[in-house]
Length: 159
Image 1 (cartoon, rainbow, N blue to C red):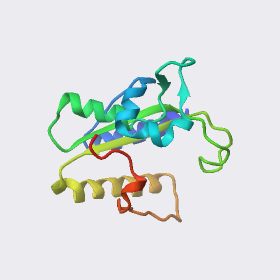
Image 2 (tube, one colour):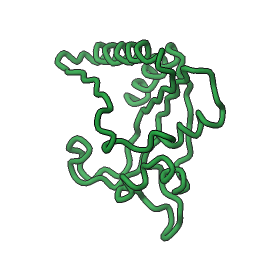
Image 3 (tube, rainbow, N blue to C red):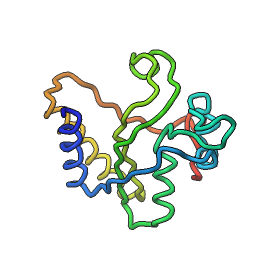
Image 4 (spheres, rainbow, N blue to C red):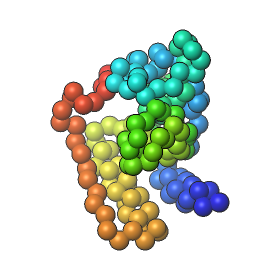
């Protein structure tokens, strides 16, 4: 019940800021992860759907969301949100001290926009974070905005 209440709060917040709720498949062909660059970087954490097949349980939403954007070619900015099960082999403690997590639900949003929209979209997300912290009465927190400065740390930009 608590999970559903939190989800409703978040959905209302996203809806108010023009996010589209999407649902991508739980299984993906390896090509989608190879093309995005995720496969080479994270393949050790992927669950193979069936022995020696090219299908994997979805380890992340990013490539799926890029395909949604690619095929509908919406007006920018285009903002999508998904509450989705993600499946990964995580080492103990890798996910903020959660032991042996294999699946978790992630609210994951992606914003596709032009350079001229970036400041406004960052401000919207910043306000989302502050609003959520206020609702749940978080008193002490730090918010960091990181920039992509070492291209070796990031996956395929041409996707």
